[in-house]
Amino acid sequence: RQYHFIHDHARWAHSVAAHTWLHRHSLVCVDDYPAASPDLNAIESVWSWMNRFIQRHHPASQQQLEQLVLDAWNQIPQS
Image (cartoon, rainbow, N blue to C red; front, side):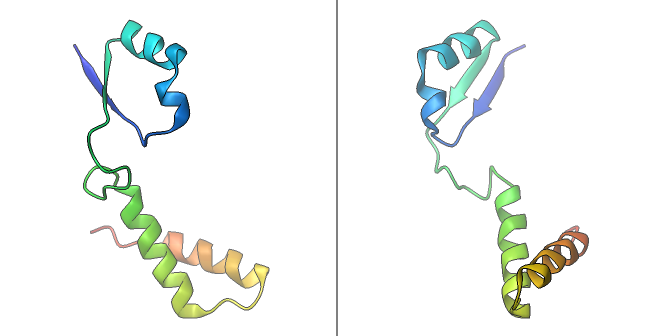
């Protein structure tokens, strides 16, 4: 079985050690797509949704921000 590894163009991913390890474990690097593609990286949509949620509530302190992050995380739409 062959696996494909999608990375975000980080420097470590282009090192000899990384390429050797990936090759040894039959992983093919896929690096011909945008690094922040929401189609391939679902968490980008979650971060975007959480950011909008928090910005709408205008946190005034670190404590409020932390609570809003928790609230946002618990209210992420499953769709």
